[in-house]
Image 1 (cartoon, rainbow, N blue to C red):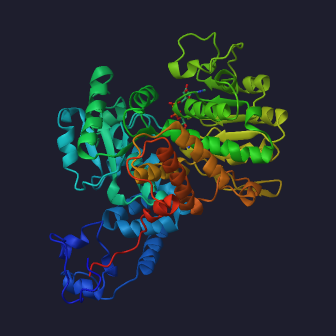
Image 2 (image 1 turned 120 degrees about the vertical axis):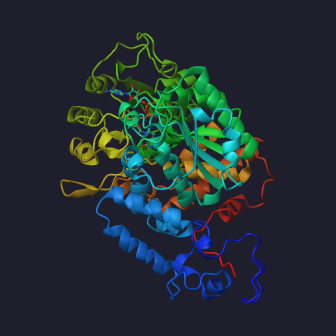
Image 3 (image 1 turned 45 degrees about the vertical axis):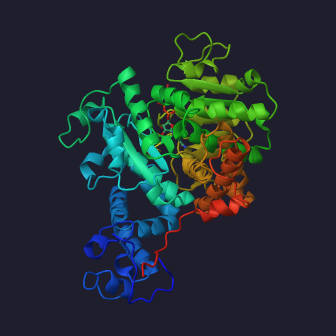
Length: 554
Ligand code: NAD
């Protein structure tokens, strides 16, 4: 819009909404912050209370209402409704109160919201494609109001957090993750598209719930399933070129398979496998600053050998190879314990993703015993099994380590392998602890520990921003490795002293900008970028970040 147009002769783009239509447009709405000039020119007089508010005053009003809510689910519903009404204000509130609101718009509350999704459902968000839409996916994507999509988060709802199959009710996850893309890395909301591919559900309670809004048949598998995923990927290529697709909360067999099929074909990654890996590796790098050890001195025992566990293991192996280990030697540093026991070579019918870690060693069926025998420097819980890190396990870790590293990453909080309090209590306060969902500070013998959260939000928004800004054709393993190092470098001595191996969430935009720059540098160096390299890449990346401030329309 021309800067010097007199306010009484506005020149608006053709089709720019006015009146009620403008107030109902969540991207453009400013509610009581519309100026006097805008109210006159855009047919808003009388539709709003007379006094003009600043965005700061609006934030104050929102926070007053937010803090009056009596449950986390109510806070979630309140924030989602605000997002539906006024996106600028929603993102302003979210970026200014990220630490307070992250547990609401993401784990743990988003898990509860997905479990209740069909009951609390108000307005549709994102795109649903389902088995009944086969052959029409491209046409459906054309129904999306915005043609500038650059990042899609898609789920098939089979493994929502650690909560299992929630079918089409898993939509809360792509919606929440994309809010974090905007809040944490400044990716403009209009570039983001949440998608649920509804291939049925095996969740009987949902199938029988009269309010369930998804397909009620059992999950389709095999060729029929693959055909739908392929159709979706092609529909994205047709409609939204240069779009990054983040696969999220797929069941583990499909997650590994789809990553293998698509990682070198399109621009995609799987956050549960690769994003988790980077955040956990960053945590290990920081923990080593406390333990004073080197990467090649680590022996990591994973409790859980699924997407998150073997994803972390694979990235740690890459990091060890970079540190000079051969691939077989690097893998010897990672051990896995799954629902059957220690993953060893004598076990039959191991899933493909575990085979590399099936070491020649006697089988052990008890986890505490595995800790006593293997003497790991770190245990990483990625099983979804609450309480699996028993006092016996933690004491065994404390016995063989001066500073035992304990990551209880399972989400939501109720699934965590141990609480922060337990980790510190059973190791005499010596544990270097991180969790997947946030924990309150813990007090042991008068000392306060403020544990960090191994939140993937430290990684995926930055990777996404770097990929989008450089129009990278693929997302590479090196990008995640570098992201881990970049994140760890942001942890200060003061953070470590408090017991946190991650930086405070209020620094996350800076973290994301640095990770984005590092990812884009890799895209340029590897010839994967789809646009000329800017002279000042870090400056360019930062200039692309959306700020939640109101634009002047007049
Ligand atoms: P998954 O289903 O792929 O894997 C779960 C693994 O746990 C399987 O190997 C299974 O054998 C094992 N397991 C189940 N019960 C067990 C038991 N009793 N004893 C030992 N092992 C057992 O799931 P996933 O994607 O790997 O996720 C696992 C957990 O990690 C979830 O709770 C998820 O929320 C969490 N997670 C956390 C983060 C994070 O904190 N940043 C990121 C991703 C996943």
